[in-house]
Image (cartoon, rainbow over all chains, first blue to last red; front, side):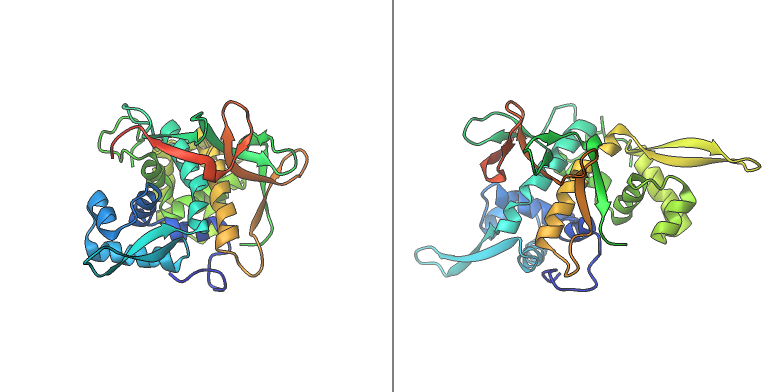
Length: 153
Length: 153
């Protein structure tokens, strides 16, 4: 998929546009591994057990979509290799991951409990994802939020 | 898909579990229509232009997943029919929708601008989705949030 900025056949709905980037299962898992500090092809591949050609394709899609960028590194005596990093757009996916994680833990729980906790880096205190008033900075309950359509579908 | 609560072969990662419910394109669009106040089969079908058998299947999946429930209604002279409503779990998807929408508008923008704005119901003032400290209720920048794994994948 090309970076979606100017394409006129993209879905009008921004939820659909986001899911074009994220909706594919492996793409999400690849992003999660990079977010966890796995930056090299071999590390990501080993961690996920994904076929190399499939991982190449997914990484290319994510680079084209502007959420992952490549850097070149070289170890002594080896050839140049690529490492993979989140762009700013990729880092901002964190809020989506947090929202999905929180919902999954609440509504599709596992007997063994949540798979991850979201915490403030400096204090270790728990955080959650929610709606925040742009004006007051205070949390707004989701039941008090309306989505106002600005375009016809 | 069955309600995921007790199944032991569900993905450990709650992001994956959420996407099992949401990841399928039509499921998300059906939820969006119900969230916009379209509760009857014919209304949802007309609005999306989806084949009736496909819509039936998607609604059944969403009911089984516990995010949509059926109610029965009857109009004078007609037989009983079902209408479709979000459960509490379905309503809590609002935060995920908001996060996806916000990211899509920022990083996959369309020339014609955002497709929806998120506002506080009572004041009409804009809101956004972000991380919130459980303790202080204050917004935490996503760069200050860490996901701490509580289970091995």
